[in-house]
Length: 434
Ligand SMILES: NC(=O)c1ccc[n+]([C@@H]2O[C@H](COP(=O)([O-])OP(=O)(O)OC[C@H]3O[C@@H](n4cnc5c(N)ncnc54)[C@H](O)[C@@H]3O)[C@@H](O)[C@H]2O)c1
Image: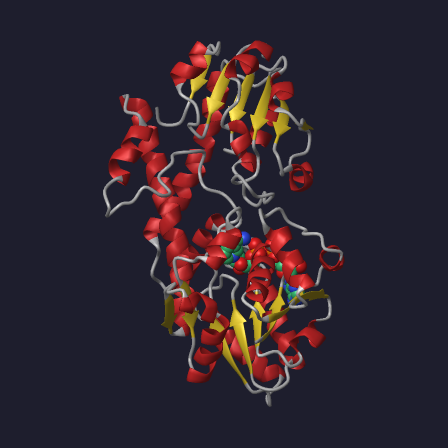
């Protein structure tokens, strides 16, 4: 199969690299010239574990290349994937489809022969039909089908998720397109990974329903955590107790500072908007969004309380600012709400993050970036554990406490126990839901 991948972000680049590893001939396209220049030089513009090695292997095998020239990549391709961003449109919560539709129009002008145009970006129900209209209008003679193939990979574990997915969802309307999709995913099909073939609308809905459900699950345990704090229960025990129930499952049941990231906030907002547009309000999703905002604000109050009810003049060391570990992605990270509140209240903030600085420097003005947690703790009034990078899971707490002016820990990921923290010399330990 000859594949063109439009958009080389977290999804497009991983998908393109993995498809080339399946044995397909893949050209990755991006508008951003600096990204393509880096990729052509063998450098990966994002942080995703394992991606550099897999990319180098497939470039060396002659199956993977990068270009700014969409026309040459699409010309003669059997399949063209659209993997551009669908951020929240300013003002109304809708998914912004500008990039998807612009890509569709460019593809329409460039395709030659029968082509399947596949939307991998997360898009509202009905978008694939609109993509088809756009292509038809731009190139009435084009011979093509559209297909929906939402992506479920998680940043930080993206290659494994792509290569060993829980399922692949493919929305198609013709057998011919279904055959092309089956050929593309044959290596997974042969290894018995479930491939679910549906109509276009169901495939589009599956992606939003999955993300909204996961966001609801996280938010549910975060709300239970709040009640645990008032009642003396420990949310870690509660999570374990309910997670062992096979009907519930133990994933996405860790209480924390609220969900963030490149998908859940924008996808819940888009689903809520789709519901409103169809006069069928998504009441659960709308509530989840509201509760999640409240959770983040509650975290600020927790830190303020730990700092003696005021941030003014305090030095706070924040460990981890990316929205989760093993990524450099800062989109909608809880840190973007929490850190400015500390600074706004008069705190001096030091930040340690293994990969967050390149993105975070611009997004978190006024913080001091420090390489090492012990250096960040020096003379500090509090440390806040915000993202659970492995680097922060086995800190020498006595060394941290000794270095601090007043040893107080706000552990928003419940990594440590109060006992251990207090025994190590911390005078205050605050977790979530305990
Ligand atoms: N990031 C994730 O974990 C994840 C997971 C599943 C699904 N998704 C969905 O996948 C889509 C892409 O997400 P992402 O995080 O990879 O986005 P991203 O912002 O990291 O990457 C998008 C890329 O597309 C490029 N682009 C935009 N218009 C283009 C055009 N006309 N031609 C060529 N390139 C163009 C941009 O320059 C950018 O590099 C979104 O819809 C997102 O919701 C993301």
